[in-house]
Amino acid sequence: MGVYFAAMSSEKFSTPRQLTHAPYGHILTNCRVWSPDGRWIVYDVRGDQLGAAFDGNRIERVEVATGKIEILYESGRGAHVGVATYHPRLDQVVFIHGPENPTPDWSYAPWQRRGVIVKSDQPRVAVTLDACNVAPPFVPGALRGGSHVHVWDGAGEWLSFTYEDHLLARQAHCHPNIPAQANHRQLGVALPYSPGIAVNHNHPRNHAGSHFCVIVTETHDQPLPGSDQIDRACEEAWVGTNGYIRLDGTQQERALAFQGRVLDSTGQPCWEVFIVDLPAHLLECAQLESEHARVCGAPTTRPAPPRGPSGLVCAQRRLTLTASEPYPGIAGPRHWLQSSPDGAQIAFLRRDAAGVVQLWTVSPLGGPPRQVTHNAADIGSAFTWSPDGRLIAHVLAGRVCVTEVATGKTRFLTEPAELAARPLACVFSPRGDQIAYVQPVRDAGGKIWNQIWVVGVK
View 1 (tube, rainbow, N blue to C red):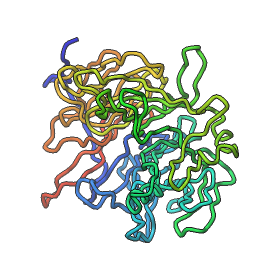
View 2 (cartoon, one colour; view 1 turned 180 degrees about the vertical axis):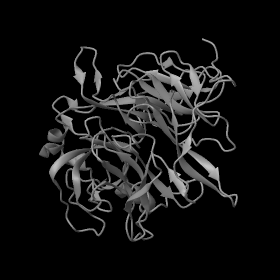
View 3 (cartoon, rainbow, N blue to C red; view 1 turned 120 degrees about the horizontal axis):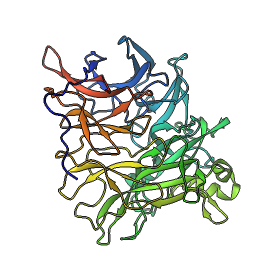
View 4 (tube, rainbow, N blue to C red; view 1 turned 90 degrees about the horizontal axis):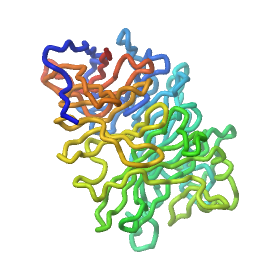
């Protein structure tokens, strides 16, 4: 296939609209930033110009038609908040909340944060998603650390998140000579649990949560080189709106695609695409008394997925094997894997034979990956699929684009600008007619601030 250029100079571009104008940084999450009706876009604010530091104290939303700003939540007592996503059907959002009254030994960190849910008709009222239980006895359903990037599944029932463990992070820092498993980034899911998760009060940072949380990926301290063992799982996405079709024609209702770090045959790290199938009875398995030790972990061991009579109930599989390629592994800007709405394709970024970062897809059943784009320049951002599964939105050469998945042709939606669109997110609206993205703007005093923009898809 030839190299495609996104648009000829004579092509008429869409007119982008700047929605926010305030002198602080505005940050979009990589997906699910539109309200279900497409009326609002949710974002967090950062104090620095380009939003590099996690130091904001508000979750805001902007009305797309009018530019009106509403504050959904404002934190206090020194806590920071951010990385907000919408429910697929309800007018509510979930986001990261850092610790209140931070101290030198308990300030914001990957292993010291939580998820909270705020309903738009009850702004400033945050319901804690994940319980925290950092002193034994440990309670099934509670975490011992921090959660991050919370996203509801297509049904709006389960939420995915990444997780890191406070106890093991502290162990490595304060007691490195005591044998213990390493703190790894892992994936977890939060399941509806009407009684909520209550915890004991033998630690000042323990707190209750509304959902039952369970780790669903298996990691290893020393992965066997050349094997499918991983030491890190992250950058996940739900597969399909309703899962995907298995080889036997049955429906796998819930699965997460994610990036897993393996070691190649020489011991070099390499990021590959993985999937973990989640059983409908995951909650029941995690509640079994025989699984409490695994699900909760111990002071020196990681929480782990529950087991059933035939082994792990969360089936974890590797989908790509790129170690022998000229440019092995997932590459490009930080991005989260994204699935087509029908669940048949999982998109990711990696380099082609010429070393250019392109869009690729792989089936949740495995098999050879397919190179989608053949552009002359690197894909420059995280990306999302259109609701009909025909297009993927992303940044190329600093400009917002869409790529036709079937043909691989990329088309510019925006013209060149003084400041390039940020690599953070290009998120389709629920109707697929607009894309939200982040582009910096220089103010009258010369300062540069990230702002929220939208552009139409013709």
